[in-house]
Each structure stands twice: as structure tokens, then as C-alpha cells.
Image (tube, rainbow, N blue to C red; front, side, top):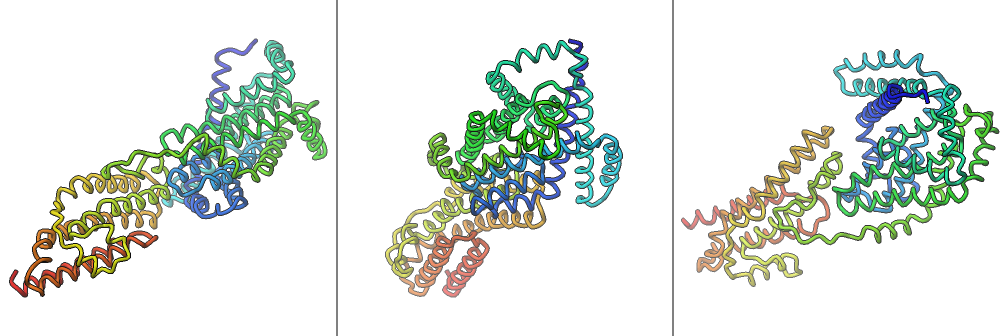
Length: 529
């Protein structure tokens, strides 16, 4: 072989440049359309067709099935997507990733992009001087797009000419002439390469270049594509390691769906390739069995047909796939956490504004229902069960005349202070590290304010707590009535909040509580108490 260490490093460098261009382009597209894409993902997955269409649209636009899948895993982690919705989106993402193969084939092999790639870099660079973030992102997209094809050109040049390196040809022939064993071997190679590179698009580019240079025949290239479909699922499964069982289920569903597709394709492998060859010839290309130059188009056709057919066949089995996944990843019944330990805040949801906001709202509700609610009721000598019951407020007050001896400050320190600090810290981190819109930033501010108001509520009931036990059994009917009226109205307000499905209206609750407290204080002043 006349292919040394220097040439290998050139090949790796070219692949790295291709990957860099892909990342810059994908990141820029996420900044340009990420909010809208995630908005679509959260709302347009009501049925299978919408889910598949959403996955296809997002992946086609951001040119990264891995980014789409990671988004789906994160949304599942925050309970924004159900398992069946996630599976349908992943199916669409698999179809969307075929666009990348066609871009590489048509612009990288059929059209010479290298002659205009550098001017495109210069053109995109001019956009980066703009003061508007929108234009800067467009500049990043243009630069990434151009660098991707510069990397592809270097990749083609770094790939050794098979005719000038008979040693390589002899070496490869040992592994391409083993019948179906060769198919399984190259499937494994495609899987490993994708896992190592962490990009099915880069592995696809490498496969297409290898076929165009005559390194591997059509059958082995198709086997590598199948391996890439398995390898690309590993990214999501790695991301799901730190996530909850819902995210793990989504990642496993991706793996199971792609594995099932590869299995049926292996059963029909050779007839399917002949069908692809026939279509390729009918489209004006040569047979991929006879011409290496025809293989990139045939591989793109194979990739597209496989993913479309796999989705069409398995879309009817989404529910059975979901059942299999639920058996593989059972629902994790977590031990009851102390209230000071966050239940919904974790690294897995701190990737996108939508998932972070959803988790903040859930954590705030959890804090209210499991701490604030208890402290307020016990501070007023009322049982929580009575608040949730059908009893009229007047009867609840009448039966609740015992002194609970509630230490509001101690409850605040043990049940509220730590988790309140965690919520504020998480919200601040989301604002500083995530690309949030003005609307999303305002929403996070509202959540922070709501939590501060919850702490203010505890302060207000704490001020009243010492008097409640005394004046609710007072012989002064006016004062007793004032405190019992306060308790009745508080019960009514708590019931309104408890049964409401929408976000907690903490501001309204605090406002009503403050007015009730003022009314009681006024009664006390009138009686010089």
C-alpha cells in the first residue's frame, strides 16, 4: 500500500472539516428557526401523520436527524411529548435525513461546488459583521454550507485512487467477496463509524466518496447505510442516560424502530438492491453494479426508499412498538423525595427554553401543592383534607377549632427555602445559558415572581399564625368572626387554586390574602388588640 500516516491524517482532517461545516450550518439553522421548530414539535404531533410530517420538516430544515432526536428526547423528559408522539416524530426524522444524502450526491458529485465554495465563505463572512443577530445567523449558515462542500472536496482528494493502489484493492477484495458475510461486516463497519464520528451525515459522505472512488461496491455501500441507521440511534441513547424513564423510552424506541427496519431489509437485501438499480437506470443513470460513478445516486435512492418504506410499514405498529419499549424500560417508581429535593429540575430539560419553562412551572406547582398549601392551611388550623372536601367553608371553620401549634418558620426552612432557591437558580441559569425569546424570558420572570409571592404568602400567614389560635376561640365575637371570616375566604381561595388546571395564579392569591389580612388587622385595631 502506498498510503501512509500523512495521507490518513489528511483524510481525517477532510472529514473533520466536513463535520465542522455541518455543525456550523446546523447550529445556525437552529438559531434561525429553532424556536419555531420546537414550537411545532410541541403542538403539531397530535396524530401519526402530523408527527411524521413534523419530524421530516424539522430534520429537513436543520439538516441533522441527531439534533431532532435529541430535541425529542428532551421534550419527552419534560413530558411535552408522549411515547407514541415521539415515535412518529422519529419516523419523520429518519425520512428527513435522506435530504442530506441527496444534497451531497447532487451538489458534491453531480455539480462542482468547490469553485464557488470560497466565494460563499466570503459572502457569509460579510453577514457576520451585521449588528442584527438574524443576519449573523444567516452568515453562519452560508459559511457552514460552503465549508461542508470544501470538506467534501478535500475528502474526495484525500481518498486514494484505487487504480494507483493495487494493494488496497487486494486488501478490500478479501472482505467484499464473502457473500452475505461481507454485507454483515460492512453493516457493522457503518454502525461503528457512525458511533465514533457521532454523525450519520458524515458517515454517509464518507460512504459516498468511497463508492465514487471505487473502494467498495454497491452492495457493501448499502450495507454501510443500514449500519449508519443503527449507529445514529446511539447519540439519543447516550443523551438519555441522565434523563428520566420517559426519555429513555424514546431513545430505545428509536433504536428498536431502526433495528426492525434493518432486519426486514436484510431479508430482502438483494432483490431490493436490484429494484433500486432498475429505478436508477430508468432515471437516466448507469447501473450501480457496472459503474462506480453511478453508485452515489443509487445509494441516495436506496437510503430514501428504505426510510420511506420502513416508516410506511411500521407506522401501523406504533402502539405495539410502544408496548415493547415499555417492557424494556419499565416505569420507574421513584422513592418519595423530600420536598427540598427538586422533582422536575434536571440537566436533561435545561437544553431548550420550552422544556426548561415547562419544568419550572411543574416544580412551582409541586412546591405549592406539597409545601405552601400545607403551611397556609396548618397555620390557620385547617386540615388539608377539608380544603379538598365537599364541605362548605363555614362547616370547615366550625370543625377546625384545635390548635395545630404550627411553627411556620420551621416549616419554611425545612420545606420551602431550599427548593425555592433551586427554582430561582434554575430559572436564572435558563435565562443566561439558553437562547430565549423576549416572550420566553418574560415567562421565566413571571415564574420567578410567582415563587417570590409564594414566599411572601408564608410571611403573611406567619404573621397571623400566632393570633389565629387565640382569637378563633376568643370571647370577643367580633374578633372571632373576623378571623373565621378570614379563614373561610382563605379556604375559598385555596379551593379555587387547587381545582384549577391552568397555571397557579399566585399573584391573585397573594393579593386576596393580603386584603384579608388587612381587614383582620383593621378589626384588631378597632378593638385595640
